[in-house]
Length: 342
Image (cartoon, rainbow, N blue to C red; front, side, top):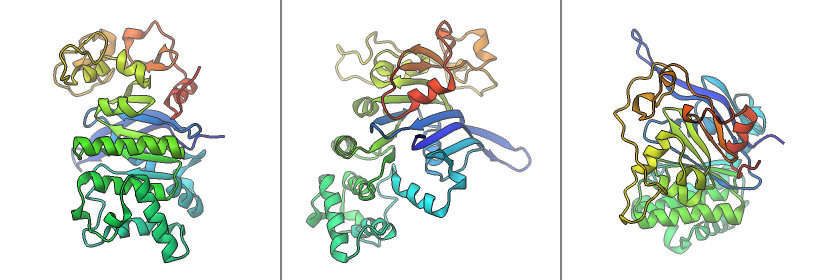
């Protein structure tokens, strides 16, 4: 059976300017597969501009790839029939970063829950519609009697985000793409939202692609992790292995930059940090070369392949060229939402 959702050698390029046309490669030659049995959580992390949101928009079919294909159950999203696209929209849901922009301030909260119920024919009466909305709100820890009938501005950011989680849950999706769902809310609300995501994963068998710049939350809730830099994969694999023993200099940089309140506790075992310079324009080779403290001449000219540095971890860095080069099948296996096995 093909994966639920797959990116196959996808590249997305944006262009601007009429005379001096400039191209920006947001995602380059990226392959990724989401299997929903068993359900699990895969984190996609990287700094701003690494291509995380572009990746989410590609997976949702909001934008089309410049090269490669986005497949839903083996079918290119661009060739889906109206019926297949309807099913796709139900099985693949999204939670956005800003929990306020998705609301119309003139409508009560009820509206954002009623629209998917009506659009997908989930209820045949007003009573059934109300019961479904109440059940979804209770699942994410909100009291229906204190939620329904009120306007978006009457809720905190964390409450609005939990309502969006409830909205996604209404459709009983197989996959939820969560694009920075906890970045614009306070710490206590963040913990609640992340607990909701983990509960949906464990109790309802929903897989997640958790997109974030925050390695701490990615480490907290995910089983697998993909680290992006300038639209390309630097490291991917089991989250415990990648976070606690980072192999790529960029991953070491990300982990080494996390502030620690306890000076005696090291986030990574060696307590290593990476001293770097500012990013420079890319002219071929490894995109991280101009910032890497271990750069070699060949890093400037030829992009490194994906090396299998451990049974459950892959790294694109010439520091590990003694390791075997991964095949496409190997890469897709470790990119899958389920924990990769050998």
